[in-house]
Image 1 (cartoon, helix red, strand yellow):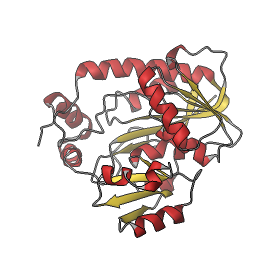
Image 2 (cartoon, rainbow, N blue to C red):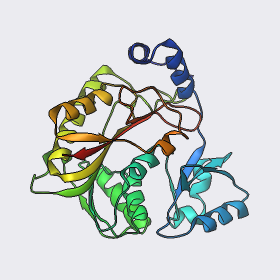
Image 3 (cartoon, rainbow, N blue to C red):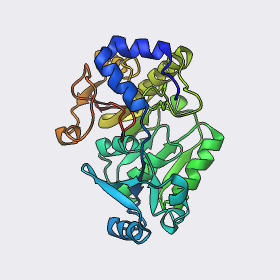
Image 4 (cartoon, one colour):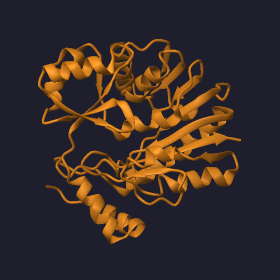
Length: 298
């Protein structure tokens, strides 16, 4: 098993203290089960559960989402061989990454921007939550990732999504959206696995991520309609990418925080946050580390 990089350990200990840092590292060392989201655009939760039972696949439900299932003792490759996977009835997705669309609460008929959309898990989830009735723009600047995004959108039966192959920080400010999901590129400090061949974390990556996050947040707030809401999320648990980024927005006066439902918080492993209206999820045996904040433009 790999070790946590010393520079990351130091950042975590400075932010959370030694005891909480050890709990985080214990989370890094877990082998998480496969989790999936039922694609209600193509099937029903009951039908997927029935198919899993027929295949003798054991699953657990999740309190905060009827569509989310935890699969026990089965590998991804085994699920990918199933008819329900091949037909787009299910989407393999981590529990943490299912949270941003739920926190956003996308509205039917709304114009919605998924600002860093590939590979498409959150885009297709937004479409399912709105019964394919939202006007979704999915932005992705990397050509190969944009192709994967398009593949998943087609496979999941999503309609009416406009895929924009572009750098989201350079979108024309003539664009205007009711809601925005910004799952920003980050250092990945929440998703580290000590079982992988290498642990990818560097201060250079952290600094580049912060620069990108700041630019994307600024652009998002410019093209969000007044009174519109957005969710900012990262798979990082470092305050420099999360709470400090949100503090900059609050200090600018452009937006205010919208508290995230307390009912959702009750069922998640949380890290202490300087902003109690936000969510910072501690990595454990089920969840990757993740941060979420909901903002409303003034």
